[in-house]
Image (cartoon, rainbow, N blue to C red; front, side, top):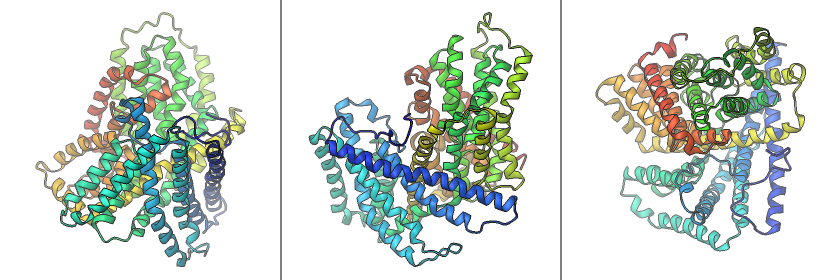
Length: 624
C-alpha cells in the first residue's frame, strides 16, 4: 500500500503510453480520490452527530439522514470511479488468467472497452434522469433533488474518462484498435439484429441475461458492467422502456440508507487493524491455545469469528488475521497451503457473523429486520466453526509440540487485560443496536469512535498518515460493491418486468417435496451463484425473487437467509471459481495451487454444517 493519496497508482493496461496521459490520469485521479475520502469522513461525522444528538441530547437532527443519503450517492459513484481507475471492480478472472500473456492483454483491453461502451450508452439517460429529479424538493433540507441525482451522470462520465485513459495508456495501438473493434462489432451486431428480438419472446431472457451477462462475466468484464450491459441491451432492444428508467433502478439499488453501513464497516475493519486491536485479540487467544495440538488453527477460527463481528468485510478480516498468525504457524511447521485453505474456509464460515455486509444487503432488498438477521447469524457460524474444528483436530492430532512451552497464566492474564478493550468492541456494537442507541446503519460510527479512542489512548497505535489512504480504500471497495448492487437491482427489475419472477416462482414453488426440496435446491443453486457472482450481486438479483417463495412454503425469512448466505459463502471461497479463495491466497502470499487439496476437507465440513443449519431452524431463529 502507498502512504498517501498522491501516491495512489492506477492499474495500467500495459507498460508505456503517452506521458501526458499518465500525468492527466494522476491529476484527475487525485481530484476524485480526495473528495471520495472526504465524503467517507463526512458521512461518518454526520451519522455520529445524529446518534449523539438523539441519544445524548434528546434532540434529533431531522436533516442528518437526508444529508447522509445525498452524500452517500456521491460516495458510491466517486468510489466506483476510484475503483475503476485502480482496476478494483469485482470480476471473475479464472478464464482470462489461463490464456497466454499476449491474448490476456487483449482480453483486458476488451473488458475496458466494454465498460466504456456501457458508460457511453448510459450517460445520456443518466443526465435525463437527473434533470427530471430537478423539480423534486427534499423534505428536510428543502433543496432540489438534482444535488443528489447529479452524482449519477457525473460519476458515469468520470468512469468513462478513466476507461478511455486506460485504453490510451496501452503500449500497443494495434491491441487497442483490435479490442475496440471487437466491442464495436458486437454492439453493432446486436443493434442490427434488434428486429429479430421482437418475435423471440422469453428466449430473449436467455440471450441477454444468460448469454450476454454470462459471456461478459467469463470474459473478465467487471460484474457490475456485465449486469449493466445485459440489462441495457435487453431493455433497449426488446422493449419500449425509456432508458432513464434503467438509471432510476440503479439509483434505487444504490440509495438505500441501510447500505451506508457498507463503507462505514469497511473503514472500521481497516481501523481495527491499524490501531493494533486485531493483533491484541490474536495474541491473547494464541496464549490460551498455543500449547494445544492445532492450537493456532483454533485461534485462527476463533479470531475470524471475532473480527468478522467487527469489520463486516471479508477482505479486511483476512488481512487483519493472516499477518499476525501465519508467521508463528509456519515456524511450527504448518504448510502454507494448509494455512490459506483454513483462512479461506473461515472466511466462508463467518459470512453470517454480524455485521455482515451480505446480511445488510439481504435486509435492504427483502425488508427483513437487520437486527433479526444479526441475532440469527451468530449460532449458524458457530456450528460451522465447530465443524472446522473437527477437521483441525483430525489433521493436527500428530503435531509435535515438544518445543512449544505453555504460556504462563500470569502472561495470559496480562494479555487478556490488554485485549479486553478489543474483545469488547463486538459486544459494544451489538448492545448499541439492541438497546436502541443506534440503528444498524449508525452503529458502525460508534464502533469507529470506540476504535479511535482505543487506538489513541489505550493501544497508543494510531498512524495519522495512513488515514487518507484508508478512506480512499474504503471509497473504492464500497463503490465497487454498490455499483454491483445498482446494476443488479436494474437487472432484477428487468427480469420482473419480463415475467421471469412469476415463472421462477411457479417452477420453484412447484418442486416435489415441498419446503425440504426447495431448501436443498436453494443450497445447490446459491453455491453455484456464490462462486460465479459473489454473494452481494447474487442476493440482489435473486433475493427478491426467492424469499417470497420460501415464505409461502412456511420457511422463516431469517432461517432461509442464513442458509442462503452460508451456501453462497461456500461457493465464494471454494476453488476453482471462488474469488474469495484467491483473495485469501493473495493475503497469505501463497500460490493458489498449494491450497487446493487441503481445502477440500474444510469445504466438506462447511457443507455438512450448512445442511445441519438448514435442517434445524432453531439454530437461526431460536433467539429471535
